[in-house]
Image 1 (cartoon, helix red, strand yellow):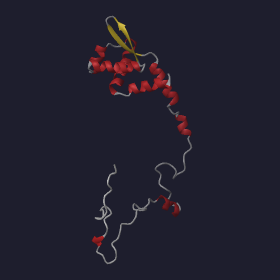
Image 2 (tube, rainbow, N blue to C red):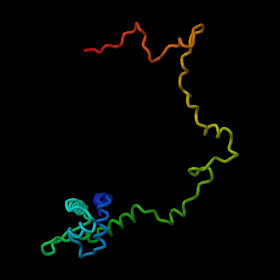
Image 3 (tube, one colour):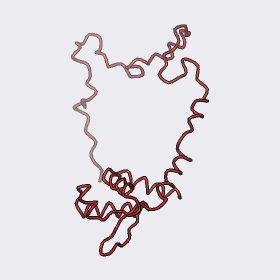
Image 4 (cartoon, helix red, strand yellow):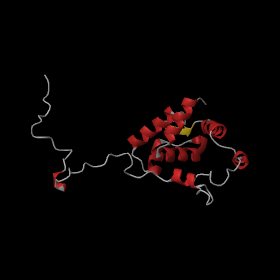
Length: 167
């Protein structure tokens, strides 16, 4: 299978009703099932079922064939095996590779706490900076003026005009 086909198949199966529908068709086997039987068993309205069957067919997961006056839907032969084969070959990690991975020394693994005998400089580097570090100190009142006389940075001076929009 090509990468685009894999993506389409996974996208089609990533919806609860379509996944249930596909699982039911796989259980039914090569004889397949009619839309009426699928609709009754899954309790899905016929128009909704038609939409989901169309999406699965577009992804190459389902085929349809005429059986007398009705249509039977079946899982596409080999498609699921190709999908599983692709995932096994390209996505799954081998258990042996995970066991052979070298273990990191204590303190380097995610979530480990630093060793107790770590140098004080290292502990200082780990300490978060103060929350107000880098912020300017608030304006202080001039000597001789009360605290309430501090300038308000959000207030404009009365003699200063607001910028007028230019035409």
